[in-house]
Amino acid sequence: MSNWQDMLKGRSTTFNWSDKEVPKELIEEIMNDLHNHIPSKQAMLPYTITIMNWDDPLLRENIFTWTHRDSDRGVDTDWGNPQTLAPWLFAFTPRYPHDDEESDQFHGSINDDFFHKMSHLEIGIASSFIVWSAASRGLSTGYCGCLNSLEGYKDNISAVLQDNIEDPDPVTVLLGVGYAGDPSVTTYMDPRTNQPKDLPTNDHANLRRPDQSKYIKWK
Image 1 (cartoon, one colour):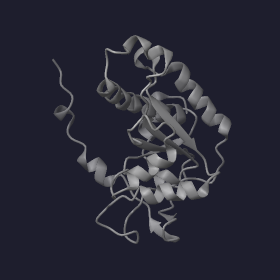
Image 2 (tube, one colour; image 1 turned 90 degrees about the horizontal axis):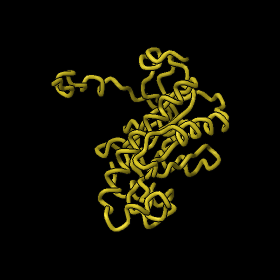
Image 3 (cartoon, helix red, strand yellow; image 1 turned 45 degrees about the vertical axis):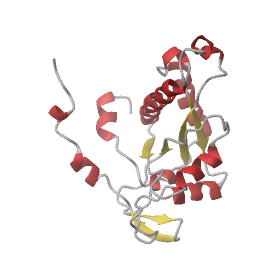
Image 4 (spheres, one colour; image 1 turned 30 degrees about the horizontal axis):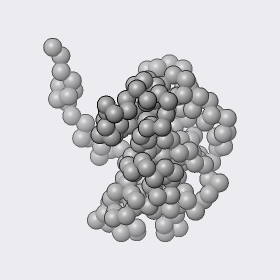
């Protein structure tokens, strides 16, 4: 798939994943693209991307549990976030590059608030870059931002994935990457209950999209 318009029209959040193997080499290509071409202020890349396959199934199932979608529902009725059950899962965490050579010029002049804002801005850029880099290779993606719907879950994810305790910010967003499953399939196996559950949809989100005039201004 090489046409930009085709990729735009064909991309949506994926909830159902194929068992088709996604080679690690393909993920490495995406990350090399990011490393060599991603826009970044002073090329500091102020974030960490933790990349997980299913080598640790307990970790992956725990992450699914920790991303409980609706705090008003129990596990039997909560839709869950099967985006996180993708063959590969990317976790984006702010990183304050105090010890990087590239940040030396800022020491003493720019505080942590600056890096905090910059990290979140660049995580948005990086995750979007990965979405389209993956799409150009025929892969699908699914965002998950349900990281604090239940008390403690956000901290659990960060405690497991965070290597540098000097970077206090928790995981900001998760992104599943893999091949999309059969579109006729409407259920998935919920690891919390080991029972089939209806797949979530984007219908409710699409209905919320405001008119273009609400957020695009011409001068």
